[in-house]
Length: 436
Image 1 (tube, rainbow, N blue to C red):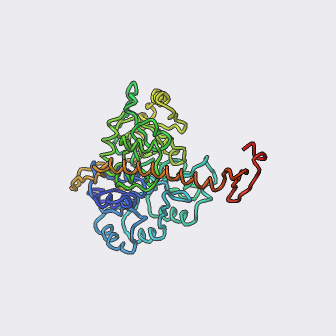
Image 2: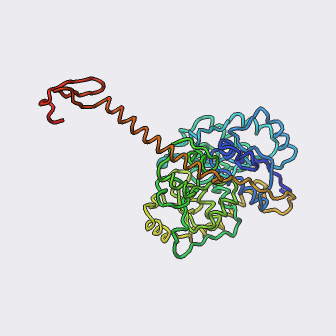
Image 3: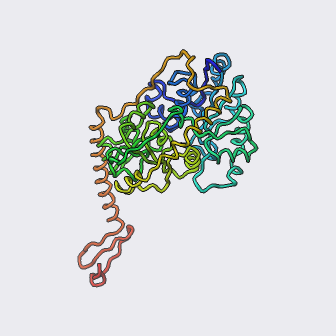
């Protein structure tokens, strides 16, 4: 298909300043996780060789389907195809309290007359592999998947577990491709590692128990809002722990609305690890070795298929154990498998009439907005916040002490001792309370 102009449904891409104006804007645009942005970014880049501005619906979760006619008209009259960007939605509960409006989306797709392409659909659950998992899926989800099957040449899925689940649902036009984000760098990607790890060049792809190692931490999603809000928006909504406050003073937390900012940051480091799957992928595409430690099925099936370094038992105990993990890291399987995986991905798109990195397009390259980290008044606000936390802690301790005394106390009254227990007074002669 020459002179391709796709329409993106659920792109999750930050493309203008309003997309990151507030915390809610940022999370709504990215569907709660900046890693989602990397999927559409990579699809566009592999088609055009650069990020270009395309017509899109940024989030199906917040989209007003009452005003869909204009977008349907654009698809039918100006575009060649329509990418429906999905993630690990084959599950009974989606992330961040989101829920795809299946019926509204089906009605939307029924009104378009261009091919629909789904690349990177996956499953997820947080236990050992369940052979009967497909039987537990909600009917509305199963109906939606079968509807997509009828409207797609092939459904590109993230791993063989997802392929197996869809096959058991009698959906056969499925091809395992991994995730489009994995192929952002094109067909000649090779990842190398340094001989020895300089620990000052190690970073985390997630928050958690690792913060006390004082390494940079890359934030990604809504569940880290207690850190994203102060770092980007000077909002201090909840109490933070000592390690988190120390990291804030050291400005160790980072989050990115612009993919190129994210990649350029990672290029300053030599090794990364954590439970973020797309954080791991963007590290590899930046030329930096990384290990995914997430133990959910989504991460397991993608890492297994794409040969992404994976270790759910990765030891973050201290510098020595992390250095040992680095020394044991072997990238040979990853590099050797990549050409064949890329060819499979390219064949999938070709079957959907999409050719990669075409030069016929006339669109100009665009740049995403960069979210500001640690604005100029950040440290002053952090100082104020820390003082408030300490003051609040003192007040709570004093209040607790006063309350405790009301519940339980012993004091002298004349020749007796008075025991107060849960607000009730008991008077005893001193000799009977010698042990108190």
